[in-house]
Image (cartoon, rainbow over all chains, first blue to last red; front, top):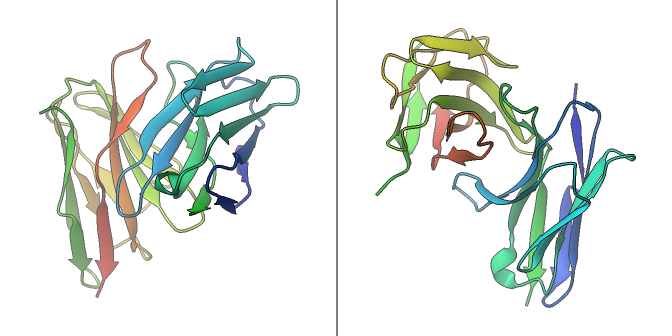
Length: 112
Length: 113
């Protein structure tokens, strides 16, 4: 039972390009949607997060777009850099409850 | 220097052996979590604890056990009942209610000999 579906599984982008990763969720009770960045052999680190009362949140080169009616959210990385090469996970949770439900991850490679 | 520490970084388990993974945090967080990460499957919840002396099963608790005797410590034991233990194990913690961010440790990679 996969409650958060993430795509694509892998992504190759040229330096300076835009990286786009998409996630779709099923449980309408989710109300917190973070994105995590993970480098090989390391633990995930929070990148950016959004709540469903806003449609977009931007922090530097990273933007989350949120579509509540479609139950989808996406991560956009502008001006992608080789240092952005990592695995990205979307996640969702219900406020005050349990733990995060993660997507399956997207391995991003930014070519110089 | 606040954060979450996990040890060891690598752990080898012989068949039929129980092994324990350590997780310590000095962030004064109430909630702690254990996740298992397999290639292409994201992170799956094993156990979580909201307060000391209380813990709940996650989605894949079979073959694992935990304890929460101290606020800063949440060790995970991989028992011999877990037939496929090879994975990357991640511990996380979260601040009190109203804060949703989970902070992760560096992980322990468990391998079977």
